[in-house]
Length: 135
Image (cartoon, rainbow, N blue to C red; front, side):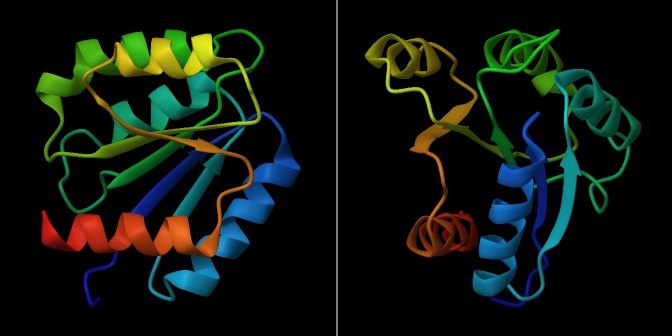
């Protein structure tokens, strides 16, 4: 794939952002990866880049359990902002939560593309890239 995909990793646990960045880089050598440790930082990145298709993220990985504003609260904010996005994005919930209720709640958000258990695998990233390339 020649299109450079922009990833925004949103997880308060630095180790998971690091692991996921490494897995993405192994799978997508052209990836541009931005890591943030809070939902408020993620909103800032998204709002600051909302006027530019080139700088706007293509793929978001969002953790559910974060302090201040959890992943579901962030999704609510993103859903309100989605009509202003300069291009379609794919949003994946990436979590260590084993609660079926979290999976079901994620499905209530039309902007959520998928639900992935931590850590993300190389195959999952390959599948995401393939899906994005065919969109």
